[in-house]
Image 1: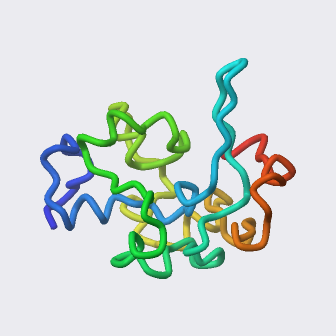
Image 2: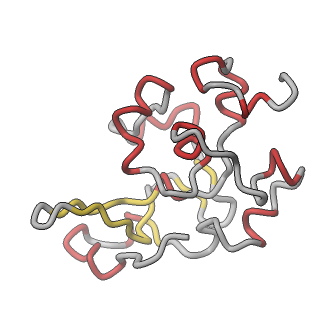
Length: 146
């Protein structure tokens, strides 16, 4: 990978660099609730069935569509459509908005554990969607996702 590739425009990243941009927070794997009046998107602690809640990684990333057909494949083009449902701390969203990565991002700190020590990730704070009825997701809404 190129030095400081994360500072390049997202469309200029090669596939390996694009994947490396993920900070490993696990937040994009949280189920969200969309309310119409007033329009609002709310994250829940209810995670995709494939999220390892401690590692904050998908347990079947390469084959996730076999189990979760509607899992979004994030690309620079798709990012324009879905950036609003990514958390404000997300590296993809930050770079899409022209902002720098945070100091706790492993590409800056050199340590993948920094995000967890900073309390930014969802490590050990989720419950799998297989354990919660969808009608009860409102009981797991997150007020502050930082």
